Length: 508
Image (cartoon, rainbow, N blue to C red; front, side, top):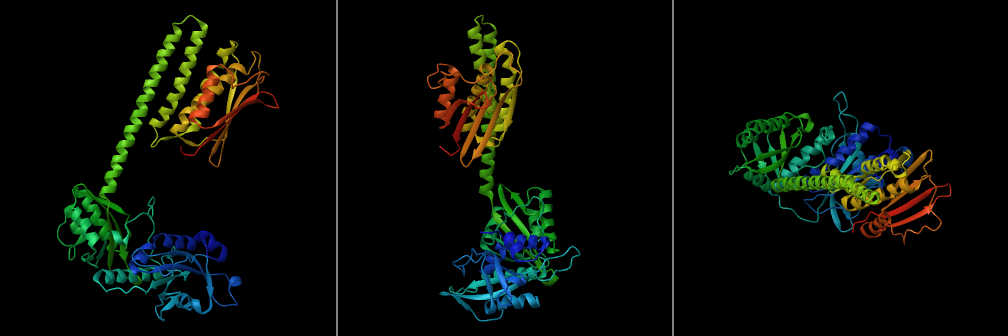
């Protein structure tokens, strides 16, 4: 299914600013849908060439269903194009620039619905409203009778005020830098203020949220800005909360903010009510997020603990490597010294993974940096194998990306062994332009890795399956066991050898 932007760009001549405004509206209009107990459909007039028989035609580019009432449409309406009598109310709202509320209920199958049409404008850079760029259809399912309770009346009144602001171009408000679309919903808690800042209505959930903050009495009649200043533990935080309410009363839309009092946390959003450009009050949405923040703090503590564990494991591995290195210096037998030095490099490669995990916020690592460091270490010891000090150039192609720790640890061991095997056995003492290339390619849920050299190639009788070398045994065991993958070693047609490794990236 195409996105709102795709549909508008394909079927209309609206400019980038208009499209951005419609995108912001569709990101913020759940509030109006819930307050209206109605589906909202965003209709744009299509280009003249796509109109049916010259009649006005409209295309639905977005839809939202209410969480407070049954939907009027069981089927998704996005992408539907309509014309003729079916869009008469949309055409009137667009041509006359006013909210259309006339007309009898219509039927969609067995569902009766009431049509309304709200013209959409945006504020230009000079502060003036643009021409009508789209129409919001507000369609209410009438099959469920509603009791006109105080909650419903306040919801509908607030919805009408916001709908008028859509028609004026003052809703949705500008988004603050870095602010996400996450916000309290109508059902979380709604407070309506009059022009002086007094609470005229507070939903039961909003009342409960403020009880968590320590305000036990009813909110209706309270000056909310003054109340927030009184109940805050921190006077500075209290003055900031009060300032946000006052800003909304003066027509501004302050950023969403959490209020923390006595261990309780409430997320708030303040919206001005300025239908027809006249400030008449504000809406305050409030959501009790105390338990959410408690879990967040627990997760932060857990993450810090895990990172500390990885840090200590890395330190312990480095200590083991240092002890092995000291032992290697005290051994006279060349074979024993070489075996200990190989063990040092193996332990150090695992320590690299834990060092990276100690700096990560989760159990995953950016693997490219680890591969580059392992390759550099292998190149540094290349001259020690041949005794002639040949220089082996290491190069990486492609990206391994982010890998989970359960794959990264065995994979770095395998790559370490492959690189060491390449620099130890691939090149003669007089080799020039010696090079080892590590290639990585992610395809669907597979990681494909190749370690290729331009050396003398594998012997004719080489069979890795029966080899007794410890390095090859480590490669086979980790690849087929821990990594659940496969490996193939072969000569390259252009000379040299390569190891081809395939590792599944699916969860075990």
